[in-house]
Length: 432
Picture 1 (cartoon, rainbow, N blue to C red):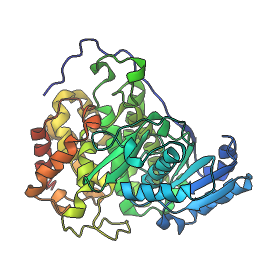
Picture 2 (cartoon, rainbow, N blue to C red):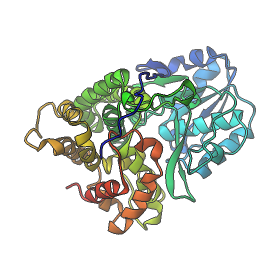
Picture 3 (tube, rainbow, N blue to C red):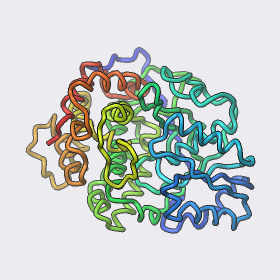
Picture 4 (spheres, rainbow, N blue to C red):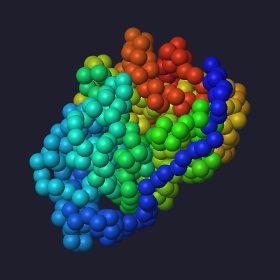
């Protein structure tokens, strides 16, 4: 279903990104960097599993050596929920005041830090700020504490974005808080920190990188929206010339590095870290669409399946689907759905990701899907939603959760109906 032609097409796009420091050993300079923000105290937010690697303490010591007072809180939960974020905020409020929040970890730690920063500096409760219609959709009324992000996984792009993702447990849906003030002011990307990342985490998080790049590349172009006034502009503005550059670079890096990074190759891991950064800078402005919208209910509803699915590389005490794995779970079928809206973009992306043209004989509408399925099989992703525990009886629930993600679906290159999403979900039960 084609998008309506805007009566007054948009002529302006926006672009924003955090300051970036990239390279092996970059975290040794973080005391200088955070002190340069004017901070004299910092809260380091991380998770209990990561504490065991020593990375958070290395960051804390670098901050202390620059004269900052530092507390380390292992308050981040894998796949944050409204409950875990509220608990992290309460713990931070019970400590001494801070001038900055430093996130050390994957997207879960970075998103937890964003929520802590928001609610240490603004009134109200967490759900006041969660995107409507799930939450109140309020914007912050006060400046937030600066967040410095130190990613230890290669994938989420959370260090570049304006979004804090969470499960709302009562609603059985994954959603987010989105506002430009949540974007970290600095991303310190040190590829050495990913050396402790298990192969399963590299694979799942890497699929998040890939879908970030693909979704921003195929997103509705910024000129396809109605013209907005300055106060109506949102961080996700559609594909544009700058986001396109980052998406292309990310995909070209992934084509050569992804499989090697999962296998543990150091050079490939560095390229994956760079690809994650590029993809984050692309989708953090263009936006994402159908695969990410589907991912929220796929991850959020797994607790109710009675499934015993435990992803490799994750210390999961109960069934869970990592965000990147949830995004990838419907991506092949989702890009088959969006193909007709932008055939040339889908085919160019397939060429970048399949430079040896191993899938060149696949019919054009399915070629990108075939490239994705082959990659997913090579890196050990689930064979479909059925392997996670979903069945035909779960389709309506996933569709309902997806249709609540209108902020994301609005970025799709075509209008998406409930019937469309149901078809994508059914086609994603078995990839091979």
